[in-house]
Image 1 (spheres, rainbow, N blue to C red):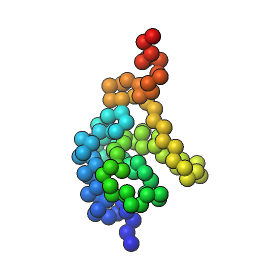
Image 2: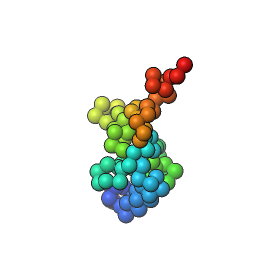
Image 3: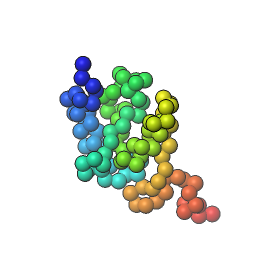
Length: 105
């Protein structure tokens, strides 16, 4: 049996997710249309929810920075996903609502 990521069904789902997101990262909105820039991420991991592996509602497009932040568990030996996003949006504004730049009081 082929791995999910080698199947035509995955390739179609991935392409559809990229087009639906207009090739923009779901977190910061940056353009990820160049080869190697985009990741299509499973919101609910395939290992725990294989039934959602190809569901459009379970797929989001991420830039490489935010994909790495979504998968902080990789390389740590942990099996628990710890998705925390930081950085800025496509306009350079902080994603953290508590960032000092956004504090106008």
